[in-house]
Image 1 (cartoon, rainbow, N blue to C red):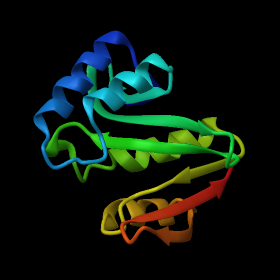
Image 2: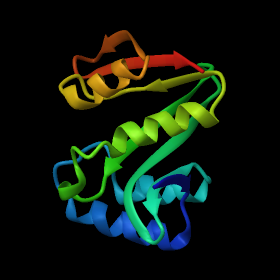
Image 3: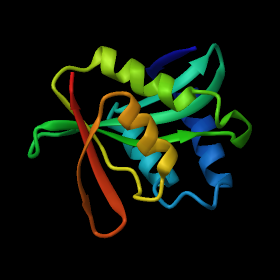
Image 4: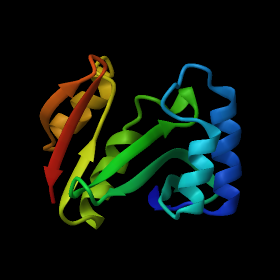
Length: 135
């Protein structure tokens, strides 16, 4: 398995998978297209099989790079460590401050972030949390 920049083929697979999901208010096909066009979309893949997508979005006004729209594309692959794999790989290739804003009730992602050394900085809007880490 590897974390790599998304290709056009990957984009089509990601958009198809996102289109089928109705319970993900944080990722839309339009977001995926924008991330791809701005060269900030990555995938966790093995050869041609794409397991997850994640975008790394620079936030220069705030001084960090944001981990956004981390999504396991097929429910049967949830719970297999793919999100943790992505977070670990991101930490190895990035420098500086990395941030993530999971939903407050996304306990799985919050647990992964905390176990990977991210610290909860604050909760806002009653729905979101901000985690960060220097690498």
